[in-house]
Every structure is written in C-alpha cells, then in structure tokens.
Image (cartoon, rainbow, N blue to C red; front, side, top):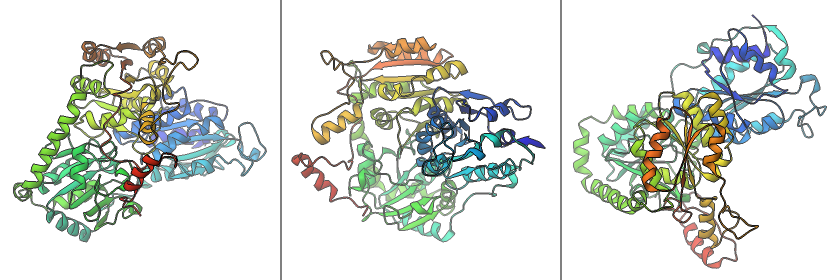
Length: 600
C-alpha cells in the first residue's frame, strides 16, 4: 500500500492492538496525528493538558492490564516534557510506546524552531536514549515498518520498558509503497524458561530452610505470578513480604502475608524477612527503600541468610547481594517449575517443621496491628493519613484499583491499605515522581473500564497534575481523586526534621503574612473543572463522601484535610541519608548505621 509515514505509524499501532493514544498536538506532529483519523487506522486520541501526563497515562494503562498504550508529542519543549514519564516507565519496567516529531531531515542542524543542535544535530533522541530501552530515528518512510515492529519487539519482550520512535516532519507526510509487518511473525514464541538445574538447587535450598521468606517485587506482578507464588508459599510454609511494586502479588488477607519490607515497610515485614535463613526473591531488584539501604538486620541479612534470586534480567542477579542460586527466567514459569518439585501435600509437613517460625510470624503480625491500628481507626481531626485509607477500603470493591502518588501517601498506602488481587495497587516504586498518579489513574481506568479506580495523592503531588481534571471531564474518564491535604510536602518536612532537626520550603504557608498554613480550595477548583467534589473535615462524613464519589458515575474528587503532624507512615526501616557535617549528633548515628550496609 502507498502510505505516508504518519499512516504507517497509525496503521501499525492499530494492527498491533493499541487502543488509545494520548498526547498534545503541535506543529511537529500534527501531520502524523491526522493519520489517526484515516480509514483503517482510527485510534481514539486522548488530549491531555501536559505532555508528561500522556506518558504517565500510558504507563498506568500498562500496569493495569499488561498491554501497551501509545503517547505522542510534538518537538522541542513538548517532547522534552516527556522525560520524567519515560524515566518512570524505564525504572519500573513498564511498556510504553512514545512517538514524537522532529524537524525535517533536510533541516537538521540548522537551528530550526525548537531543535536542539548545539552539540549534535537534532539531539533530542540522545536524551531519550538514557530513559528508554531503545530509541529510533526514521530517516524515510520505507524504514518505518521495520522500526515499528522492532520497537514493539523491544518493548514487549524480555524486561519490559518504554521505547521512542522519532518521525521527522517530512517523513510524516511523504508516501511510499510499504507493507505493515504482521507483529506475530516478528515476535519470539514463548517466554524465558529457567535452567532445570537452577530450579532443583533452589527447591533443595528452600526445603532445607527453617525460616523461609518469599519477597515479591514488581516482576511478580508483570509475570502474572500471583497464583503460583501463593501456592509455593503455602507448600513451603514461607512468609511473603512485598516491595513497592510487589504489592498485590499475594492477597493481603492471606495468613502468610507479612507486609512490606524497607524504610516504610511494616515492622513484621522487616523483622521476619531480616531473620530469614533463606530468601526467595521474585522479580525484586533490591532498591535502597525496599532494602533499608542494605543495613544488615533491618530488612535483609544476606549473608548470613542465603538468597535465591529469580529475575528476567540477568544483570539484576548478584548486583547487590551475593546469590546462592540465580534463576534467569520469567517469574511465573520459574515458580511453576518449583511447584512441580514440591508436592501439594508438602504444606501440612511444612507447617509442622516451621511451627516455631510461623508462630513468630503470627506474633509479629499482631504486634504490627497493635502499632498501626490506632492511626487507622483514629477519629481525630484533622485526620491521620491512615484513617481515610481505612474508610476507602470499607467502601471500595475488592477488585477496585488504587493508583498511588509519591511521598507520605505512598508509604501510608503500602502499610495501611490492603489489596487482594494483582494489578489493583499501582504506584511508581523507583523513580517516584510527583504528578504521576493522576494521569496514571486515568490510564488504568481506560484499561479497566469496569473496575473502580481511585487516585490517592497528597496535595503537593496533586497540584503538579491538577489540570488533568479537565482531561478526565472532557473524555468521561470516571476516576475518583482522593486528595489527602496536609498543606505541604510533609514527607520532605519529616525527613528534614529527622536528619537535620529543622525544615525549609516544605510547608505551604503565608510567608508574606503571619505564617499561617496555605491551601488552595481544591474542592472548589475541582467543581470549576466540572467534577463532583466533596471536602471532608468531619469523621462522620468520610465514608459517605467516598461512597458518593464512587457511585456518582463521573469523575470526582474527595479532599480530606489531614494533620501535618500525624501525616505519614511509620518509618520502620532505615534510609541512608547523610546529614551535613555541622550536625554532629545526627552524623554519629548515621555513621553507626552506615557500617552495617552490605552492598559493597
């Protein structure tokens, strides 16, 4: 067929199963956008208010359903606005297809409008190379079909990640006789299976353990390993802890679930995992926040504990901790291979053999519940961060999806909001940008229109993508935005106070007046955008307002006024954050913890 470059991109995206494109138009891409209205390549287009949000929306879409969504921008500032979104998807291993324009090929290097060219001609792809699995520049229409199937291959196989395809303005409009390559003939068949010898060694080690713990990371969710992981834990009598992105890998009402590990993990998650004699890591890359900056005995103790590490990316195995058995494979396939070597009736025997360990697990969970329950059930106002989460859990469907922003909200949800199914807790676990959750929640709703979706954010986080309320209204994306308003960046204030004893620029205050707290009226703002909205300052209004928002059949906002001083999660682990030399007391305590780190 004779197709323009824009048609090649649009037609390939449609034939490859992409259901939505999000972005912002501009002169550098409008010819390609026009192709989305051509017969045979029509794809619904979601116009966002900021290009960063387009990438976050596609990111949330993938995390909710496991299928890629596309995003697209113009050149120059529109394109560079995507970098935070691409970096987030890259760090958290999520598939996102990003296509941008560029100046005409024959204009590269001349300093045309919005071109970066002082170090290299048309230098923008040099930027995206650092935050994508791969970036391509299409120099002609003829090469575009090959670039498209290669981009999808890169994005969808192995360790997932974002890709970038740049299509110059002249290539968008020129036509050539080309063929869209069928994707099924350009992708490998099957997924990575483990070495049987590694599986045998791993099972032998796990069966010898007296205190076995499985730690589930984001790779367990990506691989859809929920059932296999739960069943293996039962057969081994192993406790299960989770990282940021591993939340949902096992139902949190399961008796073997012990909560999260890390700086804002649960006390039972950290205590039990750090005392394990064998840890089975499933798709976890041991970031500092999930490993308490590698301080021995806080979240992990490796060594003396032994590590079995399953990961699709061999570079992650042995990167931080020494590994007794490294298994390079898809997480679900590896766990199923282990199950084949552990009889189903082993569960009863494991309970007997691990009786003392499981008693420790039960007690540690009870101790944690006693610690966190007063905050979750507090009737004081302004609210604790945990109280609105308990109320939301009471009214949200069991399979309702929560998309969680960064900071105190992220830690509080990890500790105090149980989830029961995979892909119903979505958060940015590594790059952790503010402004992510609002558009990501809309992406999740596009992916799962029949499930309730709630974005849980702090007020500082929310205001970084506040204009996207208009996107929700214009496109009828029925997401509930739960904003915990504590009038500032309270996670930063807490860290400043802990490590330096004072804080700066982390509260929203009237600095020109009497220093009183400042907040925009977010509820009124939401109504001005066209949302239904509730402001909650009394405990008796909390659950009813949340239920009304979920039931209103439209985008909605619930603003809950949260205490600045009871704002965050419990810091149950440790974070390597050095204090300035003039804070001698803080430096001394820091130095003692630093000596315990095991990553060197």
